Figure 1 (cartoon, rainbow, N blue to C red):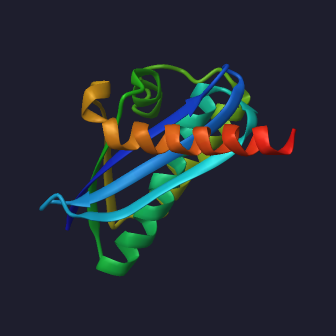
Figure 2 (cartoon, rainbow, N blue to C red):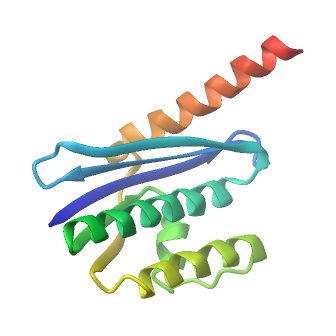
Figure 3 (cartoon, rainbow, N blue to C red):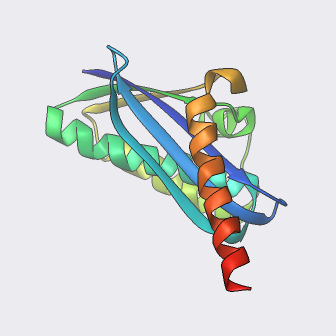
Length: 147
């Protein structure tokens, strides 16, 4: 089975409030999984982008187990994360190194899962971007109510 995964992470303020999103679709374009998550009030954009990739890989590992194998194309508008994942760029930030090692370890322990990660322009990642922004907007709205 082949799936496509659009991921995004964002931070307002960098560091600031941060969130992630992922949308997994089948070859027919039908959404199989859609998930977004608020990460906290003070994270960087790169942390959010890597966290989105980690969440996607965790979901893909589960789906690969359910389907007995899976091929996934992960699409991200973060050229940095794509190049770091593909080991074209080094990861210098310790917190990002930790996430990256967890991602690579998860993939190594799941031989029935084949993952490629590629860069896409932001306009091809609108749904994941919108989900991240909804999470951040919800947080900021909530924050206003507790002040």
